[in-house]
Length: 90
Image (cartoon, rainbow, N blue to C red; front, side, top):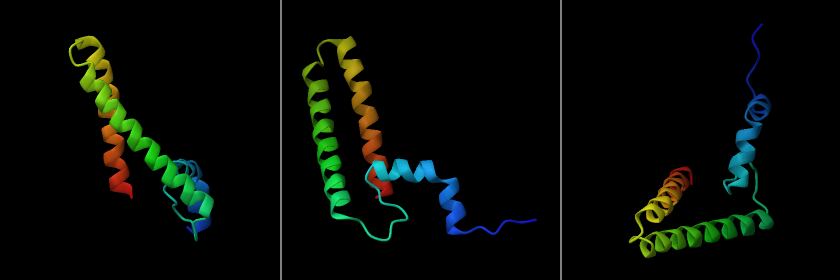
């Protein structure tokens, strides 16, 4: 017996993924976005980009100490990959 695929079954199957997207500020499968969600999205984006700029500056400041610079660069490159993903999904 085949199950009919509906929006309800898709939501049940992808509930965790939808929760993670919504927590990250991407409102998928939502009819309307509340003001609280819009404020949350804006604050998350601003905080992330400020942290990204600070991580890049911190990597630049500690460029003389190779072991510390490599630790900072690893974190900074991970954040840049997340930035690319954010622009791709938005």
